[in-house]
Image (tube, rainbow, N blue to C red):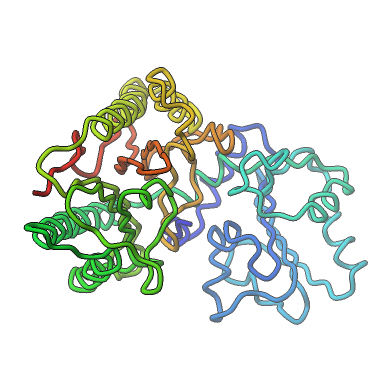
Length: 402
């Protein structure tokens, strides 16, 4: 999830303007033991005192007026760094009375809730707490678009870290393909794990960090989108084999955000037609998604995550590869993890109707997968106010490594 926005002071005025624009009476942020990382991100509660609160807290940002909080008496300073006043509770009936007072007079409040869990990345408040708030006479709606604006938006400095990380990933990708090509020539071979560990070493040299080592998938393993080699389970790579590299990382500095790319190579002089044809289709699908986003940005028109997925997957299905789709077209990029809290390019696993907002970063990564191989192309985009840019070069054909 992205914590860039929360590294700045909480902009209550901007949030209130967004609430009024959406016809909402308030944003009710809630957490218990870190179950709602979005609330912790927006409020920066997780960076106060070095530990998460162990008791329930609520923080209401109303569409007009002063924010108010509700905290447990033994953790009375949980929200002390935030604007507004707080009320304390201890026993459960005090909590319930305090909550009724907090939302009294409001009709519609946003929470990290998703109807029918359509967008599970937003659904961070448990059903019982939603029921409790509703029992106070308040309608609970999704905060999905608010999260986009106030948790998933990158600052200019954060975008700069993304672009630098992207450049480094492309360098590491090039070095990895060179190593694979060199090692598999003249009857030689290497393994997925050996190449992975080389890449992990280059991550350290480049000053990149990640939540795991990169992925190196050969032949049938490339047909599994979430395959990851380990010391115990790794496949040899020889001549005339397809190799997929998926690598993601960020700079090792505060406020840095991820970049995430996937490229495909072939350890032979001529890429087989079956691989080349499938790859050409996903490149066309990727370009359709990119074009939709860029045209919408230039025209000042809203575009939503599911629309990007539809544009890309329509190309794949019309080419006869629909049964080989196994995942959405792309995901939000974050800082604490490569998968952020923003809109995903998804009308496949979920129906993500959130807008792509200026300052957000995301991937476009269509792929098709079979029992004996898989191909994917993954690029990153940053949404601007009037333009959307791709962070690095686009792969147009499978690289022949021999």
